[in-house]
Amino acid sequence: MSTNRKILIITYYWPPSGGVGVQRWMNFALQLKKRGWDPMVLTPENPQFEIRDEKLLERVKNIPVIKLPIWEPFDLFHRITGNKNRENVQQGLVLEKTNKSVKDQVMVWIRGNMLVPDPRVFWVRFAAKRAIELIGEEGIGTIITTGPPHSMHLIGRRVKRKAGVRWLADFRDPWSRWDVLKKLNTSSFVLDIHRRMEQSVIREADVAVTVSRRLAESLGNVQVLHNGITVGSTSTTQPNEARFTIGYFGMLNELRNPRQLWHLLDQMCRENQVFANKLRIRIGGIVAESIKQEICDLAELRDRVEFLGYLSHESMQDEYSRCDVLLLLLNKSDNSKWILPVKFFEYLAANRMILGLGDRKSDLGDLMNSKYVGEILDYSEISEIRSFIEDIFENERRPDASEVKSLMDQFSHDKLVLKLEELLIENEQS
Image 1 (tube, helix red, strand yellow):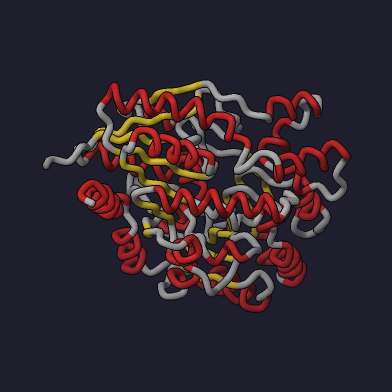
Image 2 (tube, rainbow, N blue to C red):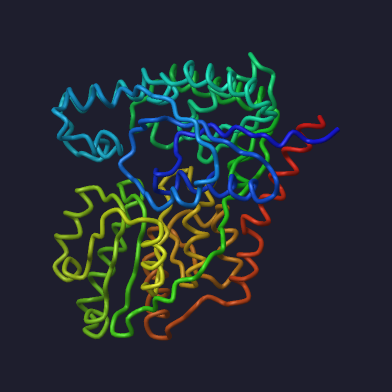
C-alpha cells in the first residue's frame, strides 16, 4: 500500500510570524516538501503576535496555507487597558511588574484560570470543522498539531475523534508543567484540567513527539524529535577586533535574567580598564523594563549595552557573527532540564563560543559539556563564569571545528526529517 503523503499542519505560528516558535515546523514542512510529501498549513488569519519577519514568507511561498479568522480575548484586554499596554499583555510582560494594578491582577487570574489551556481555545471548534472539510476535499492522510499554544492539540483531538485521520502531536515546550502557570496563579483544580487534557492528547494521538529526552520522559509515551538547524549560506561578518562583544538574542524576562552576570561584568570593567574599553553587550529581542533599569543602574556597564529590539531572522544571523560570546539563557525553573532550544543550534552554526546559564544536569548540559563549543554553568557560579569569559577574552577562543561539524550533521533538518518520516510511515502501517 502506497503512503498517503498529504499532510495538514495545524499551527498558530507561521510566517510572517517571527521568533523561534515558527522555526521548527516551517523547516520540517520545507524538508518534507523536498522529499516528496505534500504539506499544507492551517493557521489563524489574524493572530495576535507582534514579532513579524516578512522575509520568511519567501521561503514558504510554495507551501499552501489556509487561513481562518480567530477571536482572542487579548482584544478585550486591550480595550480594558486602554490599548496602551497592548505589547505587555501580548508578550506576558505584565507578569514582570513588581506592583501590579488591580486590572493587571484580574487579567493574570483570568489568563491562568479561565482560558484553558490558553487564550487561543476559542479557535478550536472553528478550526477543527475546517480541518475536517480539508481532509475530505484534499484527501489528507495525516494531521500534525504543534504547541504551544496547546489548544492546537485540542483541534487535533477533535479532528481525530470525528474523522479518524492519523495524528501526530508535537510538544515544543511543556504543557501542564509549564513554569509560567505558577506566575499565572493557576489553581490546583485548573492544573488538574491541564494534566488531563495533556494526557488525553498523548493517549489519543497516533504518535506524540517532543524536543528532548528529559521532556519526553516527563510527558510519558512520547518520542524525541529534536529541534535542529537548516544549514544555509554562512555570514561573512566578523567580530570587530577592537571590541569584545557578548550577545544575547531572544526574550529576556525575570525567569532568565542573569542578574549575577550583569554585576560580574560591571565589576570586571572596574577592575580591568582594557576589558572595560573593549566590552560591548548587544541584546536583541523583547526585554522587560525592570531588566533594562537594572542594567542602567550599573555605572560601568550601562554605556556598554545596546538594546537592539526585535531583529529579523536574517539580521540575527549577522549579529551572531559579530559576537565573541553568545549567551544562552535557560529559565530558572525545573523546565530548563527539559529544553534543547532552537537558539542553541542557531548559535552553533555561527561558530562562536556559547555561554549557557542554567541547569548543568539537563539535555542542553549533556550536549554542551561533552563538546568544545562552549559551556553551561549555573547562574550562581560566578567564578566559573568569570574564568570562561576571561579565557575567551585573553585567548580569542573559537569552538572546535570538527565538533561543530559533528553536531551540525547530527541535528541538521536534512537528517532529522528522516526520523520524522519514519514516525509518519510507521504510524500509517500501525
